[in-house]
Image (cartoon, rainbow, N blue to C red; front, side):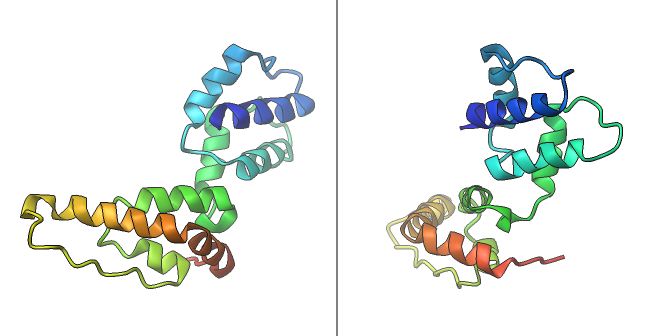
Amino acid sequence: MSKKIAALVLGRASEFDRRMPVPNESVVSAWGGIFEGKVWESEALAAVADHYAKPNAFPLMPGDVIAYCQAQPVWSSAEHAREFLRKWCQHPYSGAIGMQAGIEEPLFAIPESVVRDDHKKYLIHRLNAWVSENEQMLIDNILEKKLNPW
């Protein structure tokens, strides 16, 4: 997916700026590797437009796109919200998913058969399963709620 985004970004940027590298396989692969897990298609294309809307814009670099995307709120796109869910599934006690989606996360009872050292792993597994079952509803709620906690 990140290579596809890189190709789109490079193609769009080259429409604005002849100084941009020709988006060949090597360049797309290099940019895609940097983009992995840090950018989403709609935000990345918006980053190009934002960058070249500025006077005397310099050639776009991968970091410019990443910085723009990372500054966008989690509700800026479904892809961004999905990445947020994947990240926060690893933190079952945080409440971040419930806060962003406006839905109370379930509390999972830990069976006595699960040893203490495996409690967090068990909760991560259960939270991942719950998010997977409810992913579209959670994403829709995140996009609708547009929580800005700051």
